[in-house]
Length: 139
Image (cartoon, rainbow, N blue to C red; front, side, top):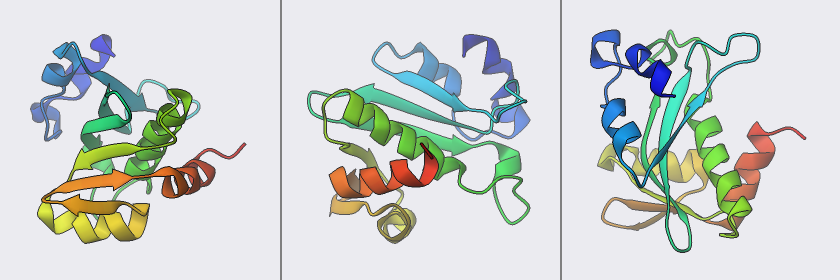
């Protein structure tokens, strides 16, 4: 991922400082690519492992995967499904949490099955986590 940092800069249309996420010792950054084109990043997610769940610090689609002209639909859902899968692998029953922008709370409740836990805190628990994994990881 460190070798990809030049690709994910504000100059290239990315909104967040992904170098800072990569440099944070308690976080892991995962990239989504497509088969046959592993050099083009479709989206990124920054995660940390808490005592009983995965916490999602940041998530972002590539600039070309945003808005009405996006190339691929479902980039954030795919990255969140990965976080849920990681949560199951760590023994956390699929639980992940994150803080949402206020205007996206209802969207996350409808599209991800997330629960609004107060303030801007959102939680995805076992059943919606399983549904996301089934949707994005065809096995």
